[in-house]
Amino acid sequence: MALDKNGIAKRIAQEVKNGYYVNLGIGIPTLVANYVRNDIEVEFQSENGVLGMGPFPFEGEEDADVINAGKQTITTLPGASFFDSAMSFSMIRGKHVHLTILGAMEVSETGDIANWKIPGKMVKGMGGAMDLVASADNIIVAMMHTNKAGESKLLKKCSLPLTGVGCVTKIVTNLAVLEVKNNTFHLLERAPGVTVEEIKKATEGTLIVNGEIPEMSI
Amino acid sequence: MINKKVNNVQEALKGVKSGMTFMLGGFGLCGIPENAITELVRLGVKDVTCISNNAGVDDFGLGLLLQNRQVKKMISSYVGENDEFERQMLSGELEVELTPQGTLAEKCRAAQAGFPAFYTPAGYGTEVAEGKETREFNGKMYVLEPAFKADFSFVKAWKGDAAGNLIFKGTSRNFNPNMCGAATITVAEVEELVPVGELDPNQIHIPGIFVQRIFQGEKYEKRIEQRTVRQRN
Image (cartoon, rainbow over all chains, first blue to last red; front, side):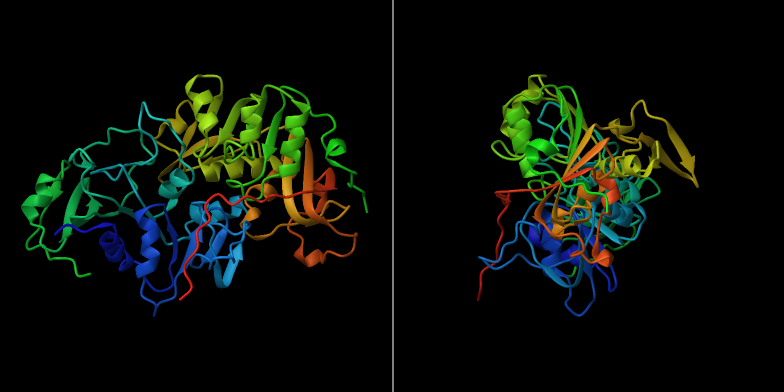
């Protein structure tokens, strides 16, 4: 059975390693924080200026001066720090943040990502996404394998305006875990009960399937 | 000590004119210069360009200037949450220049630090880089981005003193420190203007040299955009 959003977040949480500083995008990536093992040391960065983000505050304890990049009220954990926007992006551009997890509308087999603009629709802006994808070495995309119309989001070439070129390294969808290398998608794992055939059908870009593909363990 | 203190927001905004370019601190509604925005609305200056990460909401923050049709151009990274903004943008009344968030911050910082421009990887290969100079360093491509030029910076801090020294609180810091000294005149409004000597020099985020005018702000609303809480067990 294909994964739901929480399932995707659970699988991505396994990519978060001890000692990592991690930036989580809005949507499915935000859920990843709920599933990270509690026996490892990880700090979450929010690009509006906080490192060491904690859970949402209890009712009545919200502070208008402490929010995340989604403008939600948050708390901080012991060891947290606040900083200005230029320093925040020094952490990102300077590759001090180890892992960036974000959503996407389309990803191409060359690692291009489109996630900020749909022509003809109101454009809200890229926020920090272009800085994040242009800088991080380790970018995981969390998304559904197909769009609402059932069309593949893993393409030979993105049709939407790009956010960044040749930057995505890994994709976790409701159907599979894939690696992007040598200008192709490499199938690493299947969602529980999903067949290689189903994944092939849902992938427009070049898909490499090498040997037996294991099921994800989540 | 060089005294930067002015008595009120009217004095602080002296010299503000139509057609000028302003920098305004804040991320969403967090850390916005509420008093300066209210005064800009009262003054009714028109055709202004605003450099600000976001554009407020319909009835608060920069949304108030938009409602009043005072803004000619917005330079921002993200402009959701605002219907009037959307209407003016789609009708062509409002010019919008979308800039990646880190580039926006660095264009402020570059102006503050005296750099005319800088190379960034953000936006390379996208429409943001169209028409801009690009260059390869160590096998990676970068885009040349010029520093901003602005007439006034309006920033908001938690505490400050008459010397213009500033301390920020929480994530309301955001773009505020980067905009200090990045325009011809920097106007800082603070929640608490304390006597000179009270702030520990070790703890100051922005030294007074970057600030031309400082005043005690009033009636801070500090609206929360997304009140998100968890249940107590």
